[in-house]
Image 1 (tube, helix red, strand yellow):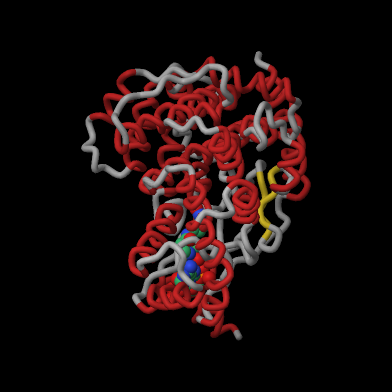
Image 2 (image 1 turned 135 degrees about the vertical axis):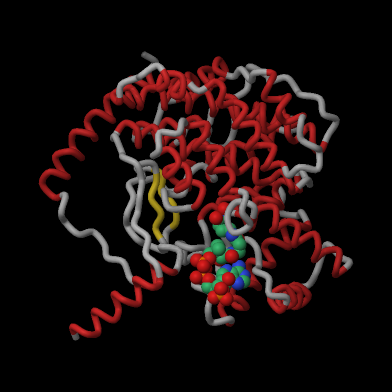
Length: 438
Ligand code: HAX
């Protein structure tokens, strides 16, 4: 058994036993209650799911296994680059331990060994017209990869429940290894010459992805390491994570669950916001006729956007109530690598001018930037202007968190997810009964 799987097996067995006895003793304890507003209002803040790999605090932002982004930046191995390697984060999410440089290198090599995209995956993408959105191509590519699912094959053969975690781990590792070449091909086919760039076996996972996309600049590779790390996980309730969790709970294999998650990520209120942000900024620049607008011009443009009944993309969040630390991490990167870039400067001007305007609407709960407010400007700086591809980058990173979490879900034996729904008719009856009793 490989070292990561062996460590995961040991940790999972211990936690599964602990959870079992905790449920035996405290299973009936109440951890939350649900209001009518929550039932109608997108289930905000209802504590009803277990997600081991990360936890989100409204004020402080995301912590991966207890570590904030600045702490991860300090503690995770960096290999030959300047930013933490996503391999290290995956190891941490799966085992609750910061890996050594050697363990991280082992994982780089392991994903390298597992990379093997069948030709029918590229053929499935080729069957789509080039105008197809990159996220649709990505989902099709993942679905085509599903032919390789060990979970599905073993289930068909009658695998016992005790083996679910093992094949989920195998599928997750293989899927993560194969996402970068598939995603890179989508970029090359849709936006470049259609030729695949062969991987460089000496590079780590994120920088090899950059290389296959056609970007060999050392700083772009650092950006990809950072990008792939900070977008990986955001606890379990966000739409892409929750979709993976829900679909996986039916024992759909990791490929099917992850493809479903990517369809959730493709919505403009979720991951697609990263393309919407830069599209909106490009429209602003075109509209104003300058890449160096004044704050006043930006304020006017924001007001125009709001008056058209549109949202300001990249701002607001269902949980966060402060600037997103993932936004801050990208700002820190930009301050170091590209502070004189016009589009980066616009992103910072928006950061200074937009929150008070949103606040003045009197209805928005969080006027601060989220992760998507900054990422496009960094990509544009390095020449990747094709914003229709940005959500695919997010998706490749998101695989790390949701698949590590899916390994945990199968190891802890989580059952089919099936919450209760109500009709408005029944709600009215319940209210009438409560009033009658009062
Ligand atoms: N611009 C304008 N209005 C906004 C707004 C924004 N950025 N964010 C919220 N509002 C509005 C809402 O549309 C809502 O208006 P109505 O009552 O008229 O419907 C009101 O303010 C209250 O919303 P909220 O409770 O503060 O926010 P929600 O939890 O309902 O929604 C969203 C959170 C992220 C969907 C929301 O802030 C939004 O639409 N933001 C812009 C899109 C975006 O950046 N999405 C990415 C989020 C992060 C992420 O998942 N990345 O992948």
